[in-house]
Length: 534
Image (cartoon, rainbow, N blue to C red; front, side):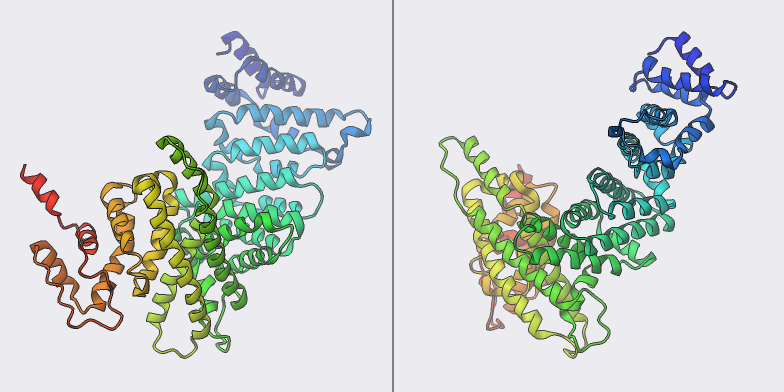
């Protein structure tokens, strides 16, 4: 901690009573006598400082902001003072309380303007301060209330030239704003500000070309990742999210269609499209389900949406193929587990593909159930996509069984819990509507039982996913679900299938289904009962 004498001297120089020269000298002293981790001393000096002096230093003459350090011309004194002011501000905002103070937050618009400066030292200094400010929630709330300065940054970043540092900064700010929206019960102003920002960024993604498009693609992935479906619904209630969904979808499909320089970004395009489907399925999928003759369609263009879903299936199967390439055998268990983790990482995009397929199946089933008839429904497109989904589901069953045989259910969750949950979600949606894969998927029932029984974090989620599959299997055999529950509880299973349909599920009558049903319906197993009696 700085000595009391030094602190008092510096505070006196920074006070309102001092001359500008004395205040400037005080600013220069701050980083010399106070460590950035010394929050108490920083707060003391910040309270002593004349905030109007710092504000004047930050209001630089626009002509200074184009200064080129390589020109050989002497650096203007005012520019030197501005850079020092940014450095001192960087020191102050290292302390959380100061970074959240309204006397600092009020400088965000000016800092955004300085971040656009051609003078590299100025723009870099402003960016450093903004990074620290937006690491705290208060800055996100402030800029969501007054979005003009961030919108100007977005426009400037799209004007061409080397804007990579600025694009990186924008990506961080937008992601933090999304986290703020998700973590806080945001008011209407904050939510509208967020929609305004993201709609602007989505428009740039759609219209830009080459590297800028790819930069904004990655930016949008990070922006949408923190949000939940509830966040998306709340945002759309206040301000329509259709324009941003339309533009992001078009940008993703354009990248997916390219065969050369965009190949390395196709996985990110799939991830971004998966976020769209997860957050706004009505906008994304209704264009597929409704025939083109229906004039009420206001969703992603049919051809683009159908293409994106087909690519999800194709890429999902490609990810499975890459993971089905066996790594070299290892003699010890740890090396084998490490090799499996490497193998699973090769197919990371399967998580997004499977989750998008699951959301589409869920949405399509619910939407068809809500229709009074098939008029206006594009049956041909839906059936064609169902064919793609069936092949994808069959590959997923084979993959999960193979994976389980090699490492076991516990290691599967340890290695890639997101992959497990998303693939189970997809398969559950498919197996709850079509029994053709039920025979091949019988081993999946035991796997789900293990996860429901042993995983506190994911057990309830997987249980919720597979319950409709059990209901559907019983229904195909004409078995009443409530009676089935009672029979399981009484240990008196008859499995009367006299009313079975032609496509009856082969699950019914198996121990695998009965054991899984006990876990899903929270009925104690024989082992549980015996343990309770000890």
